[in-house]
Image (cartoon, rainbow, N blue to C red):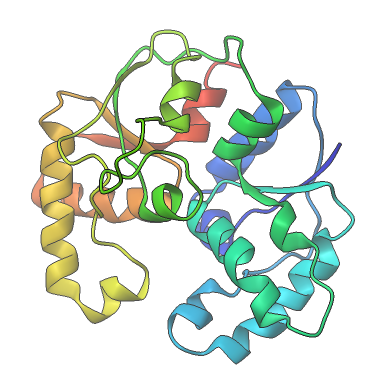
Length: 244
């Protein structure tokens, strides 16, 4: 099983430690993982802003870089969801094999590798943030608006980390307000949603907020810093790899 590691541009530029932790964790599990050089943005920002044609060349480059792998794994639910849901449509008339191969690292470890043994050590109380793309497009957890049996793949993996106490805030799958272009176009609403969300995370008594998408964590961390809220933020893969 050959794995191509996709590190989204904002993770590469702002949170390189998340990319390193992802590679470290996959290698620790004995997996054959490679990081193709020359990879670029998946095209999500352009498409979300209404310029889908500008995303097509990036989708074609993504296809070229990753088509030879059995799986494409990324520490980002929003980028993963964009590739999986939109690439075949964007590349209509051209071969696209990467869309079905692309997985977020959480679902890959949970559903494909099926990790069921102890991972690292993280002796802290963490509040779990369920990003919208993860809940409603990738199925990482059960959406509260549907009458289905509750599940959470992120929690399942965190329970394999020694000392990690996992809690969830009230209204656990409500949006934090970031939403990519939404945060640029509706700044006041975005800020208020972020404040409300961080307050709910703090009410759990957690030391950290964790989740599968750096964009949500970045937004909430900015809110917390501006408002003087004493809580820290860490991507879930960093916790899974802690102490390995």
